[in-house]
Length: 406
Image (cartoon, rainbow, N blue to C red; front, top):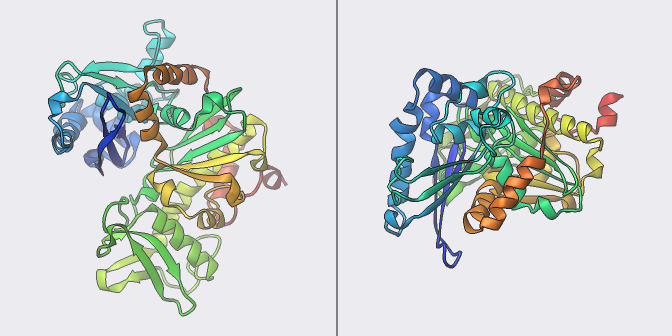
């Protein structure tokens, strides 16, 4: 399971053959507790256990029972997610993750010598799921702070332990994961981007589920052409569609670099028949989310001592990253201005890493070793973070560190 702040993804495997039997995804029902991790931490601190027991456990049970197997024949489970989501699932106290220096209780206990790893293990019975009661449920280790088990799983998915090239991975979400390095040195950071690129806080936004507009093009007559997930009637617009839309508005001169519509309107209609529109206030939400990601990239590269051009491979991960158009993302400054030959759309690397860990104990040990080697980069402590953030609010190609310094 990849337990995301916005979306939950499940994969079912045959442990004997390694065959993928089924998969499933659904919107995380914990959104009533807030759309970002800090809000969830606050809610869970005041209503301990409710985020898990009132909603998530029930949704998970239904999803597992819909699989084409008897749930009691499920004997092993691997769980990844950011530090908050993982710890809530394992019924850990998450209060410390919301307080400076933002650390999981497992990280604190490890530093105190009370445990040897930040990973967690429980049983099927204690997990509240309908799997075998003695099943082993393994929560992959978190790295540090908000850089959680999902970031750790991404490192496993891209084979970072054996990588000689300098690679970067960006898993854009409510909490964007950033990884930079190779087998010699690894830096990891987490960007508090918020839910805008997953459809949250956007007037007609929605996750990338059936009915979401994922593709937008603007022709010379000013007419929008849209592609919809599931080839059904549009219900809203998801992250990849929002990036397309921003890029097209910028290209056509209908929006300037500051994110202001140039026709003195504050509302652009994409699909009048289904009442789907885009507001100038939506641009403000997206600008801040983009700026957090851009500033994170700048800080991590600066800490590593490299420029964007030094990166050999740039992985765009996650469901959002898989459908993102690289040209559109470059135009608005969401990703570095690298050639297509360096950009790899890796899909959901977190669930891929979780799958690898599920099927191989050797790879699970490799995952634990990778986490111990990774250096956590706290973005807010960098002296130029605020400058990078302000610059990142502009919709223009992301400048190199040297250009920003000038």
